[in-house]
Length: 211
Image (cartoon, rainbow, N blue to C red):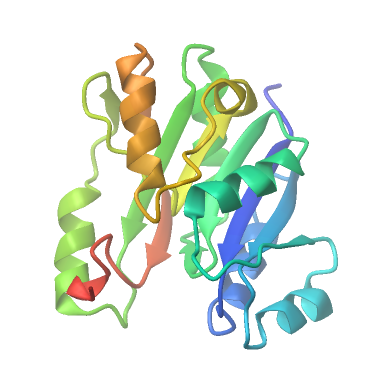
């Protein structure tokens, strides 16, 4: 049976509205061989209190920075993890069902697969621009990308071996995932998009056009 340990890296900053929902769905997953590492960027709300009180199995790492560097935060979390596979999800994303992690993991049965990202669906409070954003970008067809470098760490997974070779850029202030995807594609690897590994995400990748 294909049952590798998966390290789930959750990035947070002031996510007390979402984090309980996110972690509750993670711990309800059908696939059970995982650990959860939360990388928190100096939250000022109740995020950490909620996690400590309700999810004692979560390992909390404090990433304190005036300028949030997403790649650096991810690299920090992955360095503290143990899994053969690494899954990444934003603290304000909620797995759609209990098969989310299983659907991500199954793609790695093929030893040639090094990275996968899943679908993001709008929530019932998403703004119209974000609904359009997510619906357009994350369709219902599974894709094997050999030229398209698009990759998105709000809902994704990769192998530890590919991360060791290509860690995330630690200088960029955003799109560390697409920078990484471009590098991996350039080196001849493929990226899988699996719509069956779906999460709810209240904003699109353009954040409701909020500069």
